[in-house]
Image (cartoon, rainbow, N blue to C red; front, side):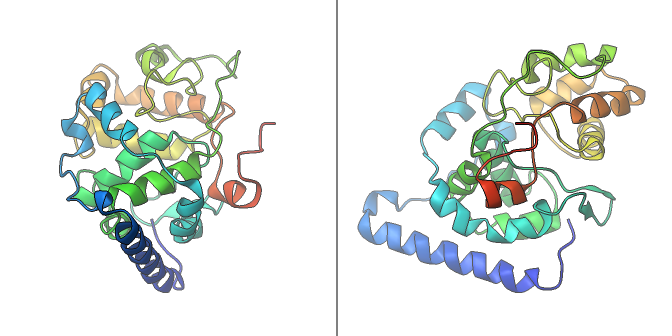
Length: 242
C-alpha cells in the first residue's frame, strides 16, 4: 500500500511504542521473554494454527496504541495500493486469529508486500495479537440471508467461509463479507499464480477458473460485513450494517 509522506514518521513511532511496551512487559513478567516461533502460517495445519493463536490473548487497549499508523491507509475509504492497483483491505471486524497470522506472514516474507513487511517485521507475537484484537473488536456476524444470487463457483468457498462469507469454520480463515471486491480479486489471482502461498487455498483455487473470480469477488463484497478501521477508531466496532 502507499503511504502519505507523514506516515514515515508515524512508522518510527509505532516501532518505538512497541519496543517500550515490550520492555515494560518483560521487566514485570520474565516469562514473556522468549524467541518467536519462526514457523510460517503456511507451514501449519489448521489445528496447529488454532493452538498457536489460543496461546496468546490479545489486549485490544494496547493494540489501539500500536495500530495507530494503520489508520493512515486502512482507515481511508477506497484507499488504493499503488502497484498493482487495488483497494487496501478493510480490517474492522476481521477475525483476530486471521489478522495475527497475516501480520506474521508479512513479517516473515511468506506474504510479499514491501510496505507491510516493514510495518510488521519488528512486531512480536504479542504485538500482533494485540493489534488483531483491537481491529476485530466485535467480529462480523453472519446473516440469515445472502444479498444477491451466489455465482456457481461459491460452492467451493462456502464450506470454509460460510454462505455469505461471514461464518468461517475456523478463526484462522478470513471473513470475506463486505471486503472490497478488487482486493478479493487480487488475492484470488495471487493464490492462483502461487505468489500468495497457502496449502488449503492453493488446492481449492486450482479447481476454480480465473474467469469466475470477478463474480465471486463481487458477490462477497456486497454482503454486509467488514468495515474500515476509522469505524473501529471512532465507534469501537463496525456500524455500517446495524
